[in-house]
Length: 399
Image (cartoon, rainbow, N blue to C red; front, top):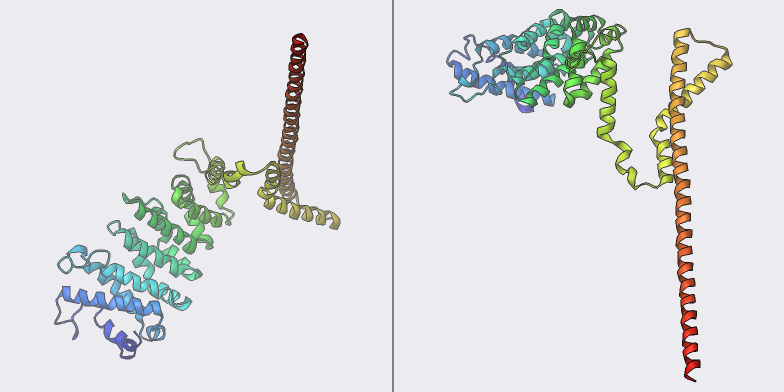
């Protein structure tokens, strides 16, 4: 790769990334040209991954060449009909060009803003709004949007202005007979929300207005495989104070009487039931070990409770009284944690009582066994004495 770079591969290769006739392409038919273009794009992908051509890529305006080539690649892509069925839609011009853009977007903030200013989002969103493209192309498009917007507020604004928020909300409805493909697109869409929308207040508000939160919660309810991703994204969006009112309006499509609070409680119960946690080995523990296990289960709650107690004590010492809503919130947390502590203590008392009862039962059983043994011994001795008296009586008669 380094040798190809030194020999001027970049300058040479860009002359073939066009469908216009020039001194390099005029002797090639379309199929031959596509084959060469694919080889060039594959080599560029390898070079960009190794970052061996970063400086030269800047100097040669590599991104501008690829940006200009993308519409030509879309227009001239013909999927399985390329090269006598040699080139499939998954390794054709569009995905290979998108891969070059993806690796280019990872070269730093300057390259991200440069691509954003060129107008790349318009092309990407047009691709993503076109339902005729396959899963691989959609996934690549979403990944590029995510990469370009990550830690780049300028690109987040451009993404929103070009219709990216509306596009991404539609992708949250994505369905595919192939469940693996569906899952990949949904995860890519959630990642795109995380990096292209979260943190940009205007984009977040537009996402809320386009029912984005409702669609995200629907995924949490119905798509267990990606529930963790969806909930993580929802948690970040909740940092926007306006999200609360939208979330509280949500109603389940499966049961119109179920809101977000019931859904989250049901998920909590389901996860606890499925994971089991400490219950898997609970039957093998002694009662003393079970008592300590209750401390272990609630250790984090107890530590949080200690911290809140320290906060309350410090406020009292300094004579500071929080405003009423904050004070109510602190007291509610304090009561909740105390309630958990009381429940643990109550359960431990029940275990201790059970242990004592078991000990009493074992002692009683031992005493009963001991008495039974003594009774058997006594009866055996009495029987032996009786038999001896009979024998002595017979001996006396014989004399």
